[in-house]
Amino acid sequence: MLLAVGIVGAMIWGTQQAVSPHAEDAVTTLTNVSYDPTREFYEAYNADFAAYYKARTGKDVVIHQSHGGSGNQARSVVEGFDADVVTLALAQDVNLLQKVHLLDPNWESDLPNYSAPYTSTIVFLVRKGNPLQIKDWKDLIKPGIRLIAPDPKSSGGACWIFLAAYAYGAGPSDDTTKATAFVKQLYANVAVMDAGARGATTTFVENKQGDVLLAWENEAKQILEHYPGEYELITPSVSIVAEPSVAVVAEIAKKRGTYEVARQYLSHLYEPNSQRLIAKYGFRPTDPTIMAEVANEYPTPQRMVTIRDFGGWPAAYERFFEDGALFDTIRDE
Amino acid sequence: MKQSKLVEYSLITLGFLFVILMLVFPLVTVVVSSLAQGWDFYIKAITTPYVLSALGLTLVAALVAVLVSGLFGLCAAYSIGKFDFKGKQFLMTLIDVPFSISPVIAGLAFIMVFGRIGWGYGILDSLNQWLGTNWRVVFALPGVFLATIFVTLPFVFREVIGVMHTRGREEEEAAVLMGASGMTVFWKITFPQIKWGFLYGVLLCAARALGEFGAVAALSKARGSTFTLPLEIDALYMSGSATGVTAAFAASSVLVILSILLLVLRAYVEHRVGHAGD
Image (cartoon, rainbow over all chains, first blue to last red; front, side, top):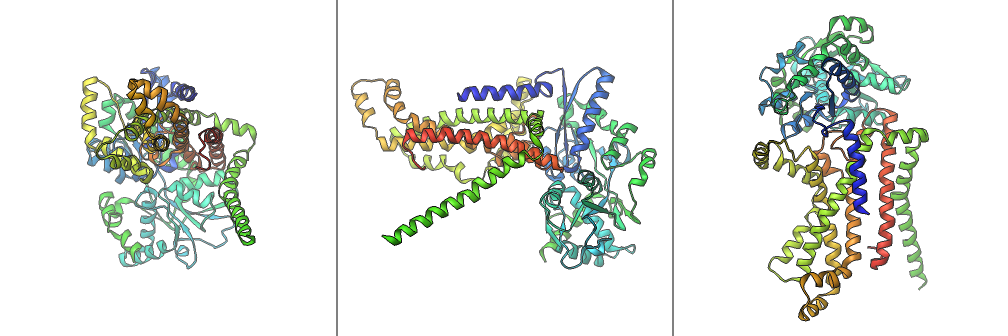
């Protein structure tokens, strides 16, 4: 009987695989290792790309997705998960792969806009009617406000959140003392710190914890869409251009014979149609024409900083997020 | 006497209340929530390619775990129950390791061995080169099987060794003296004694395999190919929409139903084995 169960199981699994992966060699499979809030976008994009690829080459391509906290995802690839492409939350996590020589050394200049086909920014999500009158960063450090934000140690979005808060605290004069004091007060108000951005969303939306969710703009926009009338999006006065980076994992893709299709998969993200799809899922397109089409849906904060203002990722990561760096010190005290 | 009756009833009430609050109530909630968006939605939710693939793989992994842990448990219990050797106690303690180690550690341990930075990766790579293949252990199906086997390893052994200890080995010794071969002794005497215990162990093992999350989650990352049902449920729950959450409950209800089936079988076997309440 047990054997029968196993055989039935194998059959069920097998039928699903025939539609998708391994079974036939004729079908190329790609594995895209990504971060949390891109689940829905890549689901749609993969179907688009498969159709485009089929029309161009007559061949089938099936794309597997993997999602989780960006840092954890990068670590999985380092530890042996065979990803053909990574589409992570920040360049720092992609750099992890470069350290073990899985990437082309100049991956960041391989594709336009620092290999970030879409950008986002950090916003606040509050419950309907904004009962606590949250308007800007300064309102988040009031006593008793319960914030939901992910952990920068495992989540890429959380790093962008921290940097945006820091930029606000530092002000235009870049006062590091004031900035440190501000982020310290801010993180003292964080009630739940999930490992990933999506976990934070679930905590805020499904489990109804906290007053304010600090989130990716695209994630916040999707929540507004899924739960109409229940939440409000607040764009703060200062935020950061969050650049999720994409790269072909050259070493693995070459070995698997998927290098060319993997490259096409990523460069196709910059095509106008894909850029429109990007906007549909709440990310900011990097193609200026497409961005102009949808600009009114993306309110711009008065001041936008970029990772270059912090001296680029390796430097920023060392200064803020490395073990024993600023984030650890403000949490310890 | 009067007072002991009072104690008896309050303890029984407490037991029932606890079980209802902690077990029955949450499980009923899962099943009810799974139907929150209607029957059609439920059917659709449990027949998506992702859920079907995950369900299939879960059943296969459970079968593999039962076969390996069952065979291993039988052999180990036989050697420990019927022979005397040095380090017997030590071996028994080792077999129990999966009971006390967190499954996620097992998953990470396999990554440390077979992952890109592990010592087994080089061996695997040269083997692949020699065979012209591209086999993977972690982040692939073998890893899922390994992780499931790890967490289920002690179950059959525990049950079989228990029966063997209570039965002793006089009957086998007598048979051997009368000239029976090893195989005859096993099939005519040992196996009939332990078969219900063995089956009970197999059911426990299967139940554990169906529900395993931590060990598999550590080394399975590809949804739709190496995801088992518990991982798929987690992915659905994290999908960031109300429909996703209901779909997660729908998939959970499938797992609950499978577990209840096993529970019924278990109750029957328990009855046969005289294992009341264990």
